[in-house]
Amino acid sequence: MFIRVTTSRGYRYVQLVHNYRDPETKVTKTRVLHSLGREEDVDVDGLRRLAHAICRYLEPGDAREIQERVGPGSPFEFLGALELGGTWLLDQVWRRLQLDRVLRQLLKERDYGIAVERLLFALVANRALAPTSKLAMENWVGEQAYVPGLETVEVHQLYRAMDFLYENVREIERNVYFSVANLFNLEVDVLFFDTTTTYFEIEGEDDAEGLRQRGYSKDDRPGLAQAVIGFAVTRDGIPVRSWVWPGNTVDQNVVAQVKRDLNEWKLGRMLIVLDTGFNSPANRRALQGAGDHYIIGEKMRFGQKGQPAAALSRPGRYRKLESGLEIKEVVTGKDSVTRRRFVVVYNPEEGERDRNKRADIIAEVERRLAELEQLAGEPHNKAACTLRAHSTYGRYIKQSRTGKLSLNRARIRAEASFDGKFLVSSSDDELSAEEIALGYKQLWRIERVHRDLKHVVDVRPVFHRLRERIRSHVLLCWLALLLIRVAENETGETWSEMKPILAKVKVGIHRTQAGEVWRSTTLTPDQKDIFRKLQAEVPPDYIALKTAKRQAV
Image (cartoon, rainbow, N blue to C red):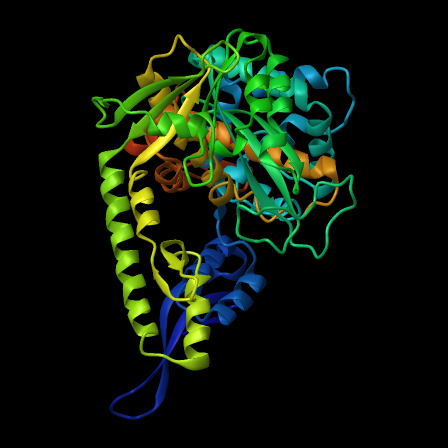
């Protein structure tokens, strides 16, 4: 089948013809399938559309060659689509928390010449939706995702925006905190604090003034330089402030600064909940400054002395709570200086798990001890040393003066006394023992923030070198977690459940003779429900109209 031009009476005619083989004469003949008329009257656009329609059934290479020859085949051509749902929803939450207003107020007297507020939102949205490097953001914005108010970005603009964020961190954190607290009527008397680490893919570490230092790694990457990150989280699980320290910082050394920084906000009476690693006499004194109080975990294992040990050994009856926990309150000390208030908490389910786990370990220890009896000489000595030094089994083994190994039954009995228990102390006499126990149990909220920090907004590894850029990177992750947690609290769904639903909301880009039309997809009931619960405006049907002569959004 092909196009043929014939001449008749001085006129040229265009025909669509087809060659076929006559079954009787076996001769090739030509049949006219359609006469397109005189050459000067042929509908060229119609032919182009026909050519493009045919291209759908050709090999990609052949189709591309034909399309390049005939040009655009339709006055209405689909150019592609960008992700819209996630960025649009996060922008609505961003504005609801008045983050745009806070940033624009700080930018009022600064002449940047770039849309710093939009750039910062794009960086935050990227961490929440599809974490990438700053350089890859040039492709993400406008090529993969539609960011309201921002068509394209350049990496140097992103770094300038990050520098602005670092320079104004104190004012931004303060405004964000009170915006969130006022909007959601947060109970700001209780804050949970904990630290984690993030590592750098570099060899070596910074000098003494740098953040990238080796230290105790909570990521199980001891050979890499790292930084220590701290978060203050409300009882609703919303992160309201962050800190970054050098990687060799010890937990016990940061409490005084955290307390001092939080006091700058003049929150009134404040109760801070911390884990065992922050416990020291100096930190407990700092936490009680300005009339504030603490709930803090206590060490329970061997070698401890003093009041925590006395609290554990003090006899008394446990009281069962509705949650299933059993608690016992113990007060030690004879005067106001030495007086301390403890709560011993017993979780029956956890106790059962501890007993079963230890029983399995002891069974394995007995099996290995029996194997030792069958060995002699150097093999016996080597196996005995290995077993004695084992991090798990060695705890339940003792060695006699003659070098014989056996079960340490005293250690087993001592360990059994801790099954399912944890010890907490508090400086607040107005709290009930039940409130102290349940308050400490809520530390899981900040543990989830740390988990999302590493697996949702992808804080690690960090590739920045300068202190201010490292700090800004953490701040971007903090703001992303803030938006995520607000969305989760308001909808009752997890971010991992919402993201695939929102990812299906696209903006399609169509080229017409008059210009480009950017139209959003129709929302499904699930998508509408998310926007409704967050009190967010849904995307309009038409996101942008760009005329051929003048482009406007």
